[in-house]
Amino acid sequence: MQQATARHSAPRYVQPLGDVHANRARWAGLGRGKTAVVTGANAGLGFFSALALADSGATVLMACRNQSRAERAAAQIRRRVPLAQLEFMQFDADSMASAVGLAAELRGRRIDVLVANAGIIHTPPTRQPGLLGYEQVMTTNVIGHARLLGELAATFAAHPLRFIALGSMSTLMLQADLQNLKLDRDYHPYRAYAQSKAMLQGIGLALDRRLRQLSWPSRSITVHPGYSVSGLTPQIPGVNEPGFGKRLQGQLQAGFAQGKHQGAVAIVEAALNPHLASAPTGVYLGPKYVSKGRIALASPAKITRSKDLHQRAWELFKEANDGFDPFAHG
Image (cartoon, rainbow, N blue to C red; front, top):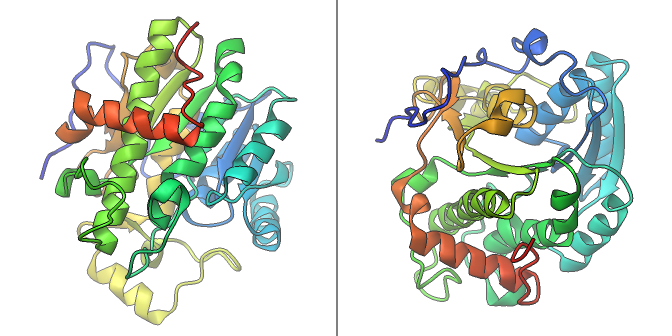
């Protein structure tokens, strides 16, 4: 398995500590005056990212499908960060209309961070139809976010905005079949997940290059959270409540897995570290030991660095935006 290593000429990167709680001092105040949108902020990596961003002083817009779950998550964040500035916004990543609606709300305010976190982890055992002829996993993990991203393109030109794309270590273990992204044949749940993450990772990396070419002030930073599981994550009432079986499974996987409060460090670091604004094009963050460990500058899977994948990922991005490329010209 490929080990994450720094391949950049930037100054030595000082790694954050192991989980979001241990990095409170590192991130303290870095979010003050900023607004961060976190899709799927009511659970998992999204919850711990929202928690840490709120603790850093940022206003966090919790873009979630289920308002009651988002409100439970917000209550738990406020228990830990009494002065947290949180807002709920409706977002269903499986809906173009929802993406367009959220973008319409966001265009009226300054947005500094956009985290594309919402998605399907437990993929359906059989192919479920999604948008544009793709299956549901690609729709939810990629297409909804791609439309949101396209609708907000002008915001990237107006002021520094960081788009955080969540890749996955699965891209290291299973190559995307660029001729079968719709999985019309040979559908498998893991392949659906891995291909969706490869596409989102490809969009994130390709976007960063385009932003540099356009000389726009924004960045796209791609991250992967390692193998982060509920069974190794702190108990949070109404947010993360794994039963005995999941706890046991987590302990058995502890040698190569970590909790979601640890995986979320990559997201928050990408959102807040001021030095990453001048990092080389295509900056990528992931655990030092691929599946777990402290976050470091990393090298994406070879397939997701390829020109062919970036081209196909951008074609998918344009499909999600009715064939239009809002990042084509400055």
